[in-house]
Image 1: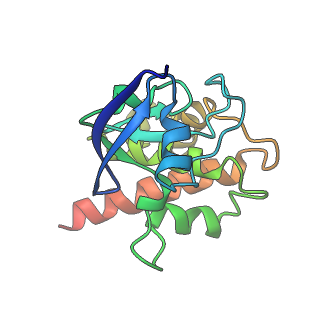
Image 2: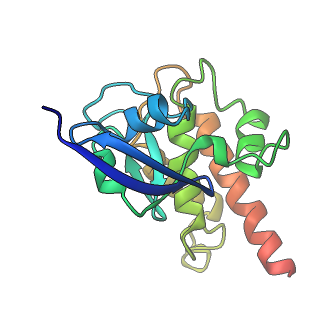
Length: 179
């Protein structure tokens, strides 16, 4: 007999009610039960980051979370980034900086970076350490490199991804300062 549970959650702003098996992962539930196939399964051990989603505002490896643990939660997947046919600023930066090749890992990177940039004051600061004589661009790049080091990409070499993170962070900072 299967251990089934009734849960509710919001994915990309849409309310869902479903019955899931206790052992089913959030990644499998998103992909197979709800049709959010942008959440990719790579290693299924939480190492590669391809399955990263934003769960209640924090990046989470969906292969390590049981679907029942997401009961009552807000989940954001890569499908929730774009506004219709209009790419988000981060998605556009990935395109502009050639931050993807095969694209398998891209949704996980996008969600990891989006969660990081959404945190107040967590964006790579182009001015951090400038008075200490450090090059501000190098510091922002180093912060971005540390961030993306938690996800694996076998194609890009990470430089384009780092450039996309820094460009998006700077654009968002400029937009905040302009308002």
